[in-house]
Image 1: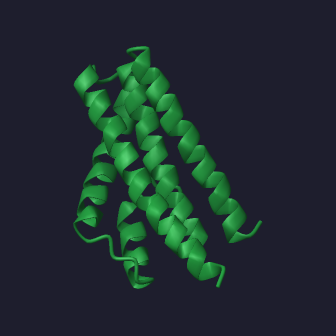
Image 2: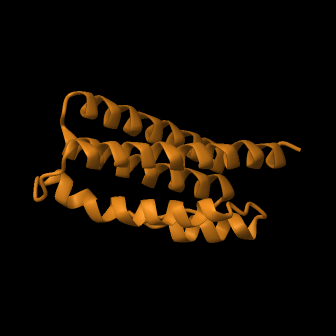
Length: 137
């Protein structure tokens, strides 16, 4: 499978996860909404790395490598890079406790996770478009 095909599958999976996060949120399943938001961020960052040709190990916090790699390829996200890194580490830390009901997350926590996931996706989708333009030249 080539890098573009693999990245497309990962981007699709990220989109599915954020849709599941929204659905869980609407059903007041706060913990699952947080878990799916984290998965969306992880898959979105994995997808952009795959598009560049990097197959990152299965780590739940992919932001540090993704940000460094994007910068090395002349995609500087500026202050958004720091925010993406903070979001990724925060959600990766909540991932396990959310799934196993070890933390009782509330609506505000789930809303923040969902908003954060959508923020990361919107920023990475912009880079994706620019990167695909470079690849297709």
